[in-house]
Length: 391
Image (cartoon, rainbow, N blue to C red):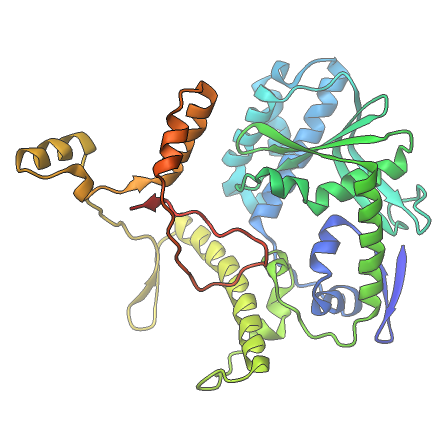
Protein backbone atom coordinates (compact mmCIF):
# COMPACT_ATOMS: atom_id res chain seq x y z
CA UNK A 1 0.00 0.00 0.00
CA UNK A 2 1.06 3.61 -0.49
CA UNK A 3 2.76 5.24 2.48
CA UNK A 4 2.89 9.03 2.58
CA UNK A 5 4.46 11.06 5.37
CA UNK A 6 2.45 14.19 6.08
CA UNK A 7 3.22 16.58 8.98
CA UNK A 8 5.30 13.86 10.62
CA UNK A 9 2.47 11.31 10.42
CA UNK A 10 2.66 8.24 8.19
CA UNK A 11 -0.50 7.66 6.20
CA UNK A 12 -1.01 4.17 4.76
CA UNK A 13 -3.32 4.82 1.83
CA UNK A 14 -5.13 2.81 -0.80
CA UNK A 15 -6.03 5.22 -3.57
CA UNK A 16 -9.55 4.49 -4.83
CA UNK A 17 -12.20 6.62 -6.54
CA UNK A 18 -13.91 7.35 -3.21
CA UNK A 19 -10.59 8.26 -1.59
CA UNK A 20 -9.77 10.77 -4.32
CA UNK A 21 -13.11 12.50 -3.69
CA UNK A 22 -12.58 12.86 0.06
CA UNK A 23 -8.81 13.50 0.07
CA UNK A 24 -9.48 17.14 -0.82
CA UNK A 25 -10.01 17.73 2.93
CA UNK A 26 -6.93 17.41 5.21
CA UNK A 27 -9.19 16.93 8.24
CA UNK A 28 -10.73 13.88 6.59
CA UNK A 29 -7.26 12.38 6.06
CA UNK A 30 -6.34 12.94 9.70
CA UNK A 31 -9.57 11.51 11.09
CA UNK A 32 -9.38 8.43 8.86
CA UNK A 33 -5.68 7.64 8.69
CA UNK A 34 -4.12 9.21 11.79
CA UNK A 35 -6.86 9.23 14.44
CA UNK A 36 -8.63 6.22 12.82
CA UNK A 37 -11.98 7.16 14.36
CA UNK A 38 -14.49 4.33 14.57
CA UNK A 39 -17.61 6.48 14.86
CA UNK A 40 -18.84 6.78 11.27
CA UNK A 41 -22.09 7.76 9.62
CA UNK A 42 -24.12 4.87 8.26
CA UNK A 43 -25.64 6.38 5.15
CA UNK A 44 -28.85 4.69 4.06
CA UNK A 45 -28.18 5.49 0.40
CA UNK A 46 -24.78 3.78 0.57
CA UNK A 47 -26.24 0.76 2.38
CA UNK A 48 -28.98 0.44 -0.24
CA UNK A 49 -26.43 0.59 -3.04
CA UNK A 50 -24.18 -2.00 -1.41
CA UNK A 51 -27.09 -4.40 -0.89
CA UNK A 52 -28.19 -4.07 -4.53
CA UNK A 53 -24.59 -4.58 -5.72
CA UNK A 54 -24.20 -7.75 -3.67
CA UNK A 55 -27.56 -9.16 -4.78
CA UNK A 56 -26.82 -8.50 -8.46
CA UNK A 57 -23.36 -10.04 -8.09
CA UNK A 58 -24.99 -13.27 -6.86
CA UNK A 59 -27.61 -13.16 -9.62
CA UNK A 60 -24.94 -12.61 -12.28
CA UNK A 61 -23.21 -15.72 -10.96
CA UNK A 62 -26.44 -17.70 -11.23
CA UNK A 63 -26.86 -16.50 -14.83
CA UNK A 64 -23.32 -17.56 -15.73
CA UNK A 65 -23.75 -20.93 -14.08
CA UNK A 66 -27.07 -21.59 -15.79
CA UNK A 67 -25.97 -19.95 -19.06
CA UNK A 68 -29.08 -17.75 -19.05
CA UNK A 69 -29.94 -14.06 -19.28
CA UNK A 70 -31.22 -12.18 -16.17
CA UNK A 71 -34.72 -12.12 -17.69
CA UNK A 72 -34.83 -15.91 -17.21
CA UNK A 73 -34.27 -15.64 -13.46
CA UNK A 74 -37.30 -16.47 -11.36
CA UNK A 75 -38.91 -13.91 -9.08
CA UNK A 76 -37.97 -16.16 -6.17
CA UNK A 77 -34.28 -16.11 -7.14
CA UNK A 78 -34.25 -12.31 -7.24
CA UNK A 79 -36.16 -12.02 -3.95
CA UNK A 80 -33.89 -14.52 -2.18
CA UNK A 81 -30.75 -12.65 -3.29
CA UNK A 82 -32.14 -9.32 -2.10
CA UNK A 83 -33.22 -10.82 1.22
CA UNK A 84 -29.81 -12.39 1.73
CA UNK A 85 -27.78 -9.26 1.07
CA UNK A 86 -29.94 -6.54 2.64
CA UNK A 87 -28.89 -5.83 6.24
CA UNK A 88 -31.61 -5.55 8.86
CA UNK A 89 -30.54 -1.95 9.55
CA UNK A 90 -32.25 -0.90 6.30
CA UNK A 91 -35.22 -3.27 6.44
CA UNK A 92 -37.52 -0.39 5.46
CA UNK A 93 -35.63 -0.08 2.16
CA UNK A 94 -36.16 -3.72 1.19
CA UNK A 95 -39.01 -2.98 -1.22
CA UNK A 96 -37.03 -0.38 -3.13
CA UNK A 97 -33.97 -2.63 -3.45
CA UNK A 98 -36.17 -5.48 -4.66
CA UNK A 99 -37.75 -3.19 -7.28
CA UNK A 100 -34.30 -2.17 -8.55
CA UNK A 101 -33.14 -5.76 -8.84
CA UNK A 102 -36.32 -6.92 -10.56
CA UNK A 103 -36.00 -4.07 -13.05
CA UNK A 104 -32.35 -5.03 -13.61
CA UNK A 105 -33.34 -8.67 -14.22
CA UNK A 106 -36.03 -7.60 -16.65
CA UNK A 107 -33.85 -5.28 -18.76
CA UNK A 108 -30.14 -6.04 -18.38
CA UNK A 109 -28.52 -8.17 -21.06
CA UNK A 110 -25.28 -10.05 -20.35
CA UNK A 111 -22.76 -9.57 -23.14
CA UNK A 112 -21.26 -12.60 -24.93
CA UNK A 113 -17.90 -10.96 -24.19
CA UNK A 114 -18.31 -11.00 -20.40
CA UNK A 115 -14.88 -11.14 -18.78
CA UNK A 116 -15.45 -10.49 -15.09
CA UNK A 117 -18.01 -9.60 -12.41
CA UNK A 118 -17.19 -7.63 -9.24
CA UNK A 119 -13.58 -7.68 -10.40
CA UNK A 120 -11.22 -6.43 -7.69
CA UNK A 121 -8.29 -4.62 -9.30
CA UNK A 122 -5.34 -4.03 -6.97
CA UNK A 123 -2.08 -2.40 -8.12
CA UNK A 124 1.19 -1.73 -6.32
CA UNK A 125 3.46 1.33 -6.60
CA UNK A 126 4.72 0.17 -10.00
CA UNK A 127 1.13 -0.36 -11.23
CA UNK A 128 1.60 -4.13 -11.13
CA UNK A 129 -1.03 -6.62 -9.96
CA UNK A 130 -0.92 -7.24 -6.20
CA UNK A 131 -3.11 -8.38 -3.31
CA UNK A 132 -6.11 -6.30 -2.25
CA UNK A 133 -4.79 -5.46 1.22
CA UNK A 134 -1.35 -4.45 -0.02
CA UNK A 135 -2.58 -2.31 -2.92
CA UNK A 136 -1.63 1.31 -3.44
CA UNK A 137 -4.32 1.75 -6.09
CA UNK A 138 -7.50 -0.27 -6.18
CA UNK A 139 -11.11 -0.38 -7.25
CA UNK A 140 -13.96 -2.83 -7.86
CA UNK A 141 -15.26 -3.06 -11.42
CA UNK A 142 -18.86 -4.28 -11.36
CA UNK A 143 -18.83 -5.81 -14.86
CA UNK A 144 -16.03 -6.13 -17.43
CA UNK A 145 -16.66 -7.07 -21.06
CA UNK A 146 -13.64 -7.44 -23.36
CA UNK A 147 -13.85 -7.95 -27.10
CA UNK A 148 -10.37 -8.04 -28.64
CA UNK A 149 -8.88 -4.60 -27.85
CA UNK A 150 -12.12 -3.06 -26.59
CA UNK A 151 -13.06 -3.08 -22.90
CA UNK A 152 -16.49 -2.08 -21.59
CA UNK A 153 -16.90 -1.43 -17.87
CA UNK A 154 -20.38 -1.26 -16.33
CA UNK A 155 -20.93 0.35 -12.94
CA UNK A 156 -24.21 -0.10 -11.05
CA UNK A 157 -25.48 3.20 -9.60
CA UNK A 158 -28.49 3.69 -7.32
CA UNK A 159 -28.33 7.50 -7.39
CA UNK A 160 -31.43 9.46 -8.44
CA UNK A 161 -29.44 11.96 -10.52
CA UNK A 162 -29.06 11.06 -14.19
CA UNK A 163 -25.85 12.62 -15.43
CA UNK A 164 -25.69 14.50 -18.70
CA UNK A 165 -23.09 13.59 -21.32
CA UNK A 166 -20.66 16.29 -20.21
CA UNK A 167 -20.72 14.92 -16.66
CA UNK A 168 -20.15 11.38 -17.93
CA UNK A 169 -17.27 12.45 -20.14
CA UNK A 170 -15.45 14.06 -17.20
CA UNK A 171 -16.48 11.59 -14.48
CA UNK A 172 -13.27 10.85 -12.58
CA UNK A 173 -14.49 7.60 -11.03
CA UNK A 174 -15.24 6.12 -14.45
CA UNK A 175 -11.85 7.28 -15.72
CA UNK A 176 -10.11 5.57 -12.82
CA UNK A 177 -11.97 2.33 -13.50
CA UNK A 178 -10.78 2.42 -17.11
CA UNK A 179 -7.25 3.25 -15.96
CA UNK A 180 -7.23 0.31 -13.54
CA UNK A 181 -8.46 -2.02 -16.28
CA UNK A 182 -5.77 -0.73 -18.67
CA UNK A 183 -3.08 -1.81 -16.20
CA UNK A 184 -4.62 -5.23 -15.59
CA UNK A 185 -5.32 -5.88 -19.29
CA UNK A 186 -2.51 -4.13 -21.21
CA UNK A 187 -3.69 -5.47 -24.59
CA UNK A 188 -6.83 -3.33 -24.38
CA UNK A 189 -6.61 -0.03 -26.27
CA UNK A 190 -10.21 1.28 -26.30
CA UNK A 191 -12.51 1.81 -23.34
CA UNK A 192 -16.23 2.34 -22.85
CA UNK A 193 -17.57 3.09 -19.38
CA UNK A 194 -21.25 2.62 -18.61
CA UNK A 195 -23.42 3.61 -15.70
CA UNK A 196 -26.45 1.38 -15.22
CA UNK A 197 -29.07 3.37 -13.30
CA UNK A 198 -30.72 0.83 -11.00
CA UNK A 199 -33.71 3.07 -10.31
CA UNK A 200 -34.53 3.52 -13.98
CA UNK A 201 -33.33 0.34 -15.70
CA UNK A 202 -31.09 1.74 -18.42
CA UNK A 203 -27.47 2.68 -18.99
CA UNK A 204 -25.61 5.73 -20.27
CA UNK A 205 -22.08 5.46 -21.59
CA UNK A 206 -18.92 7.41 -22.30
CA UNK A 207 -15.53 6.57 -23.81
CA UNK A 208 -11.92 6.96 -22.73
CA UNK A 209 -8.88 6.89 -24.99
CA UNK A 210 -5.36 5.84 -24.02
CA UNK A 211 -4.47 9.56 -24.09
CA UNK A 212 -7.25 10.22 -21.55
CA UNK A 213 -5.87 7.53 -19.26
CA UNK A 214 -2.30 8.81 -19.55
CA UNK A 215 -3.53 12.28 -18.56
CA UNK A 216 -5.44 10.78 -15.63
CA UNK A 217 -2.31 8.97 -14.43
CA UNK A 218 -0.43 12.26 -14.39
CA UNK A 219 -3.28 13.86 -12.46
CA UNK A 220 -3.26 10.98 -9.98
CA UNK A 221 0.47 11.41 -9.30
CA UNK A 222 -0.01 15.16 -9.02
CA UNK A 223 -2.71 14.69 -6.37
CA UNK A 224 -0.36 12.44 -4.42
CA UNK A 225 2.30 15.13 -4.45
CA UNK A 226 -0.23 17.73 -3.31
CA UNK A 227 -1.15 15.55 -0.32
CA UNK A 228 2.52 15.63 0.67
CA UNK A 229 2.37 19.44 0.70
CA UNK A 230 -0.34 19.59 3.39
CA UNK A 231 0.92 21.98 6.06
CA UNK A 232 -2.00 21.70 8.52
CA UNK A 233 -4.97 19.45 9.24
CA UNK A 234 -7.59 22.19 8.98
CA UNK A 235 -10.80 21.17 7.16
CA UNK A 236 -11.35 22.35 3.61
CA UNK A 237 -15.11 22.16 2.93
CA UNK A 238 -16.55 21.43 -0.48
CA UNK A 239 -18.88 19.11 -2.34
CA UNK A 240 -17.11 16.16 -0.68
CA UNK A 241 -18.75 17.14 2.63
CA UNK A 242 -21.96 15.55 1.30
CA UNK A 243 -20.26 12.13 1.31
CA UNK A 244 -18.04 12.45 4.39
CA UNK A 245 -18.73 9.70 6.93
CA UNK A 246 -16.92 11.50 9.76
CA UNK A 247 -18.47 14.94 9.32
CA UNK A 248 -19.82 14.95 12.89
CA UNK A 249 -16.17 15.12 14.07
CA UNK A 250 -15.44 18.16 11.90
CA UNK A 251 -14.71 21.26 14.01
CA UNK A 252 -16.73 23.38 11.59
CA UNK A 253 -19.77 21.18 12.15
CA UNK A 254 -19.33 21.44 15.92
CA UNK A 255 -18.81 25.22 15.92
CA UNK A 256 -21.88 26.81 17.53
CA UNK A 257 -20.25 30.16 18.26
CA UNK A 258 -21.76 33.40 16.99
CA UNK A 259 -20.20 35.27 14.09
CA UNK A 260 -19.25 38.91 13.84
CA UNK A 261 -22.08 41.36 13.24
CA UNK A 262 -20.74 41.94 9.73
CA UNK A 263 -18.37 40.02 7.50
CA UNK A 264 -15.83 42.67 6.57
CA UNK A 265 -12.71 40.79 5.46
CA UNK A 266 -11.85 38.11 2.93
CA UNK A 267 -10.63 35.82 5.72
CA UNK A 268 -13.93 36.17 7.58
CA UNK A 269 -15.88 35.58 4.37
CA UNK A 270 -13.95 32.37 3.65
CA UNK A 271 -14.46 31.15 7.23
CA UNK A 272 -18.22 31.79 7.07
CA UNK A 273 -18.54 30.14 3.63
CA UNK A 274 -16.67 27.06 4.87
CA UNK A 275 -18.82 26.82 7.97
CA UNK A 276 -22.06 27.08 5.97
CA UNK A 277 -20.90 24.37 3.53
CA UNK A 278 -20.19 21.88 6.30
CA UNK A 279 -23.33 22.74 8.28
CA UNK A 280 -25.50 22.41 5.15
CA UNK A 281 -24.08 18.96 4.42
CA UNK A 282 -24.59 17.86 8.03
CA UNK A 283 -28.10 19.34 8.11
CA UNK A 284 -29.06 17.48 4.93
CA UNK A 285 -27.87 14.19 6.41
CA UNK A 286 -29.67 14.74 9.71
CA UNK A 287 -32.91 15.77 7.96
CA UNK A 288 -32.80 12.54 5.98
CA UNK A 289 -32.49 10.49 9.15
CA UNK A 290 -35.24 12.45 10.89
CA UNK A 291 -37.52 12.06 7.87
CA UNK A 292 -36.99 8.30 8.00
CA UNK A 293 -37.94 8.24 11.69
CA UNK A 294 -41.09 10.33 11.14
CA UNK A 295 -42.18 8.12 8.21
CA UNK A 296 -42.22 5.08 10.49
CA UNK A 297 -43.42 6.81 13.66
CA UNK A 298 -44.94 10.26 13.97
CA UNK A 299 -44.08 13.96 13.87
CA UNK A 300 -41.57 15.16 16.46
CA UNK A 301 -42.62 17.99 18.77
CA UNK A 302 -40.16 19.84 20.96
CA UNK A 303 -39.66 23.23 22.57
CA UNK A 304 -42.51 25.70 22.30
CA UNK A 305 -44.74 23.58 20.03
CA UNK A 306 -42.06 23.36 17.35
CA UNK A 307 -42.71 20.39 15.09
CA UNK A 308 -40.76 18.44 12.47
CA UNK A 309 -43.05 16.35 10.31
CA UNK A 310 -45.10 16.20 7.12
CA UNK A 311 -47.57 18.94 6.26
CA UNK A 312 -50.05 18.94 3.41
CA UNK A 313 -49.97 21.99 1.17
CA UNK A 314 -52.93 22.92 -0.97
CA UNK A 315 -52.46 24.73 -4.28
CA UNK A 316 -54.89 26.06 -6.84
CA UNK A 317 -54.65 25.38 -10.55
CA UNK A 318 -56.83 25.65 -13.65
CA UNK A 319 -57.27 23.38 -16.63
CA UNK A 320 -55.76 25.33 -19.55
CA UNK A 321 -58.62 24.58 -21.96
CA UNK A 322 -61.33 25.57 -19.48
CA UNK A 323 -59.40 28.70 -18.49
CA UNK A 324 -58.97 29.84 -22.10
CA UNK A 325 -62.70 29.38 -22.71
CA UNK A 326 -63.79 31.46 -19.70
CA UNK A 327 -61.26 34.23 -20.39
CA UNK A 328 -62.34 34.46 -24.04
CA UNK A 329 -65.98 34.76 -22.94
CA UNK A 330 -65.07 37.90 -21.00
CA UNK A 331 -62.76 39.41 -23.59
CA UNK A 332 -59.38 38.28 -22.29
CA UNK A 333 -56.54 36.27 -23.85
CA UNK A 334 -54.89 33.28 -22.22
CA UNK A 335 -51.50 34.98 -22.78
CA UNK A 336 -52.42 37.60 -20.17
CA UNK A 337 -52.03 35.06 -17.37
CA UNK A 338 -50.22 32.06 -18.85
CA UNK A 339 -46.56 31.07 -18.45
CA UNK A 340 -44.58 28.69 -20.64
CA UNK A 341 -42.89 25.57 -19.28
CA UNK A 342 -39.46 25.92 -20.90
CA UNK A 343 -38.45 22.33 -20.25
CA UNK A 344 -41.50 20.95 -22.07
CA UNK A 345 -40.99 23.45 -24.89
CA UNK A 346 -37.36 22.36 -25.32
CA UNK A 347 -38.51 18.75 -25.60
CA UNK A 348 -40.99 19.87 -28.24
CA UNK A 349 -38.19 21.60 -30.14
CA UNK A 350 -36.05 18.44 -30.04
CA UNK A 351 -38.97 16.43 -31.41
CA UNK A 352 -39.47 19.02 -34.14
CA UNK A 353 -35.81 18.75 -35.13
CA UNK A 354 -36.19 15.00 -35.64
CA UNK A 355 -39.39 15.51 -37.64
CA UNK A 356 -37.69 18.22 -39.74
CA UNK A 357 -40.92 20.21 -39.73
CA UNK A 358 -39.31 23.64 -39.47
CA UNK A 359 -41.23 24.46 -36.30
CA UNK A 360 -38.01 24.27 -34.25
CA UNK A 361 -36.45 27.11 -36.25
CA UNK A 362 -39.54 29.27 -35.83
CA UNK A 363 -39.70 28.65 -32.08
CA UNK A 364 -36.01 29.44 -31.67
CA UNK A 365 -36.50 32.63 -33.74
CA UNK A 366 -39.12 34.00 -31.34
CA UNK A 367 -37.48 32.89 -28.09
CA UNK A 368 -36.21 35.51 -25.63
CA UNK A 369 -33.61 35.39 -22.90
CA UNK A 370 -33.83 36.69 -19.37
CA UNK A 371 -31.19 36.58 -16.67
CA UNK A 372 -31.64 36.29 -12.92
CA UNK A 373 -29.19 35.84 -10.09
CA UNK A 374 -29.46 33.59 -7.05
CA UNK A 375 -27.20 33.47 -4.02
CA UNK A 376 -25.79 30.01 -3.29
CA UNK A 377 -22.61 27.99 -3.00
CA UNK A 378 -21.60 26.40 -6.28
CA UNK A 379 -18.65 24.85 -8.08
CA UNK A 380 -17.01 27.03 -10.70
CA UNK A 381 -17.94 25.88 -14.18
CA UNK A 382 -21.23 24.24 -13.14
CA UNK A 383 -24.21 25.45 -15.16
CA UNK A 384 -27.04 27.19 -13.34
CA UNK A 385 -30.22 25.13 -13.18
CA UNK A 386 -32.67 25.99 -15.90
CA UNK A 387 -35.85 27.79 -14.95
CA UNK A 388 -38.97 25.66 -15.11
CA UNK A 389 -41.05 28.50 -16.48
CA UNK A 390 -40.38 31.46 -18.73
CA UNK A 391 -42.82 34.31 -18.95
